[in-house]
Length: 188
Image (cartoon, rainbow, N blue to C red; front, side, top):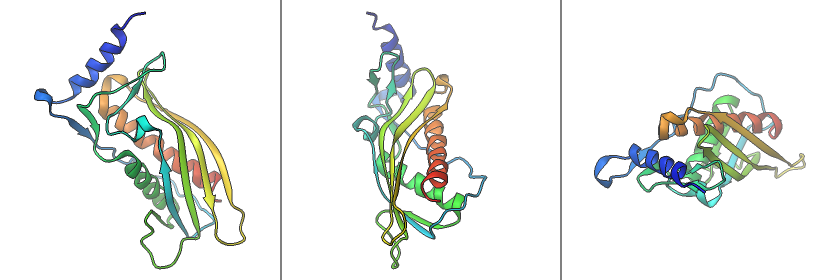
């Protein structure tokens, strides 16, 4: 068994960080929303986003070919991942639907027409250049309309040579793709 590849990946992550042990933080910039998607609800609360422990951590993790996850305390997300993913998801849904959508706590006086929960089983960048997400979403409805749930399994490519910036851009695209998927399959 060789440890050269994991050490190279860790070295790559560490090289991204500033000299002197100062951690660098990488924001996720939302890609442009270019399409409109109609949904059946006028308001939706993104109530909860649950991430695996490694994905909820500040450190940006990379999954190696053998399945191990590596990270560096010098390469961090700019925001707490669960909060950030919930905000990205709600903002993407609001832009693509034109509806009143917000993450919890619900900021309006009137209650939302529906609540959305997303539970990720996987949210990870691979050393091969793929950012993957899988899990399940749940749409709760307080009136007599049909509640629903569904599974998702999505991925987007990125250039591993782009380092943490490429990983952050891929996560942004993946969350946009997930918002589109949920709008089309769970909020109709």
